[in-house]
Each structure stands twice: as structure tokens, then as C-alpha cells.
Amino acid sequence: MVDTFLGLALPVGSTKDHPITCPMGPAAPPLSKLKLPPFLMVVAERDLIQDTELEYLEEMKKAGKEIEVAYNKGVGHSFYLNKIAVELDPVTATETDLLISTISDFVKRH
Picture 1: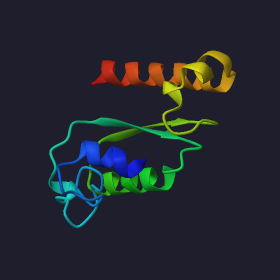
Picture 2 (picture 1 turned 120 degrees about the vertical axis):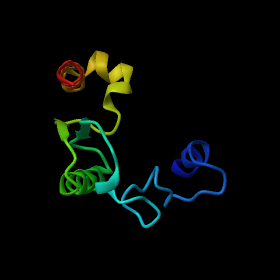
Picture 3 (picture 1 turned 30 degrees about the horizontal axis):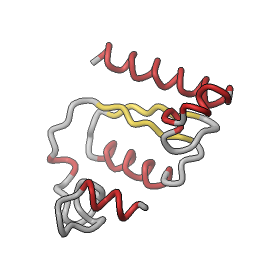
Picture 4 (picture 1 turned 45 degrees about the horizontal axis):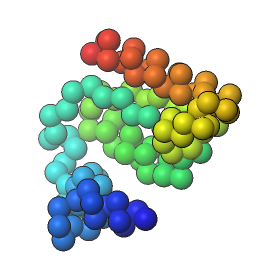
């Protein structure tokens, strides 16, 4: 499934090592040279790719980028997109409300 999504998102003939999906890989430009505005990174406690997300976060910090983190407890990847869970699970509902509030606050400050 991931390969299918990557095939739809990346230029034809690209691999998962493309800079879009591998911003710290050998084909990517140095993070320190990128001109980026402040940005918010969302990490879910039960996300299966959390280790990679946190590695990216640390590399962005080392590169001197202004980055904030929203950490949502007890939920997995893209938890806010699961309408049924948002409506029926109190943890998912609370964490979704927290995420929306965090994003709103971030946008207002920047």
C-alpha cells in the first residue's frame, strides 16, 4: 500500500529515497541550506513511523530550523482522519481537539 501511495505522489521512476520522502537522504539538499519558515510538526504517540519523525525533528533542530512539536498521546498515525474514532473514542476526540487548537495557535503566532 505504501508503495502505491509513493507511486502516486512521486515523479515517475522515483524511489522512496526521493528527497520528498527522504529529506535526510543522500539525494536531498542539506537541511541547513533550506529556507524554511517556522513550522509545526505533529507526532502521534502510537505512530508506527514515530522514530523517523523524531529523527527528522532532531536533524531540523541541528540545522537551526525553527520547529515546534505537537505530541498527541494515545493515538496513531492520522488519528484525526478517523471520523468514527473522533466521534466515539474520547481519547481520539480529545487529541483531535487539542491538535486543532495547537494548529490554530501556531498559525495565529506566525
